[in-house]
Figure 1 (cartoon, rainbow, N blue to C red):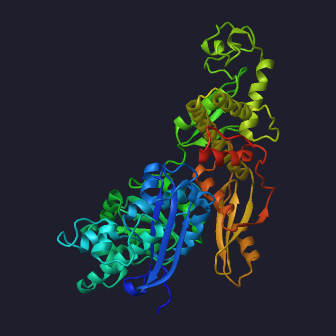
Figure 2 (spheres, helix red, strand yellow):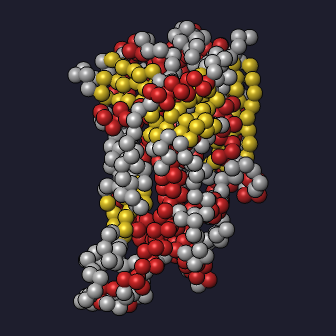
Figure 3 (cartoon, rainbow, N blue to C red):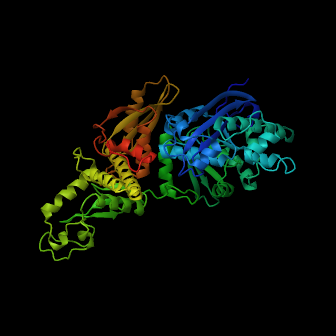
Length: 572
């Protein structure tokens, strides 16, 4: 039996009997990858008709399983009690399916959930080649052979050895049999290789097929690719661990996005930039997106389009939403709506004024408003509160935003939590749930902001991550931005490489604001790389530390809030 081939070795000549397929099936709490979660995952790895391994486990979804779903799958709340959460299951599955063609029946559903979980957990989606057996069956089987293309029907028509029963591993085994039966039908049609299989599916346009050769000059190396149109305009930018393999996927049936298929048909050539490792590729992609703003990319095209929450500089400060970061700001937020929600929650926990007029330090001549009558403001506009009396509320908000060590029991977040308890005691459970969700969003925003600001405050650090082959991926980070990237291959002393990278690294001049002028998306990917995958610090200009007694101390509370198993969770 031929050994497993990685995607570095996949080309037009890879025969189907040498390709590794991982057939996966998920059971979930519902049909939305954004709102629902996984309750069970099952996968079977096959090559050349032989089963190489199986992967299966129940998953704690962190929420109640709807009765209708229980009646379909038979998976009850008691069955998933004590099962692992998906954040611990996902890395194991990604390793199990690494370098394989991912197969699923109705693949957009299963792959959509896997991608959504990767995004939620901050894990890079590996962008595997995906094959949908439902779509393949529609291409191979005529209407006279099967009344429909449901998995149960196909399993019966094609004489699968396993009957699907809406349980993940059994359904994955049934899909394996369906896959093999369909591949046997394709043999007489001359379909012998993985690319030929993908091209045989009906969704490949003539323009895609015509442009497939654009991928041929690209190397099997990590980097960034740029599709260019007839006038040399940049149509689309993306990253890949293998440039040629990834770009070739745009010209097969594995690409299902209509806009991207249109782009692949319009492209005249593909440029590329080789990178030392995936972190450099991600950062270069973000910078190129900001520079070219390609019309076919949907995200990260406007790195400066962020919102911040600040305290105004006046005698009686108030919370304001601005577009330009400044020291002491909370953010960044991707939308003004998200920033406004944070402002509303911060105001609910204290008595900062809501009005927007400028109030002098003395001789105030305003009139108390309805907010004062509700006890939410002491009416400094009417002279009912002095600057000194107002100051503690301002200090409390500043400490919450900055993550100051002083996190007193009666602080702003604790007051918001106490309000949840009051709603629950009064049996106002809908109000309690809404308040819980608002507080959870605020805590997430604070936690993220404090982590990113701590990284951006470090003038320079050097980090190394194992490359999986006995060498090291190296990065020089200055004020949250990637300043240099390189590799020390196995057997190469890493410290001379570190010295050379530091000497040649980009100069970064910090700017005002918590992120010191670094784009939020770049800080996000750099922070994720530094805090995952066994990355180690090599050098650091000053200690890099994140506040432990502020929003970080509420992470366990956040987990329970996400589970939503009670009207409201108690804080630690």
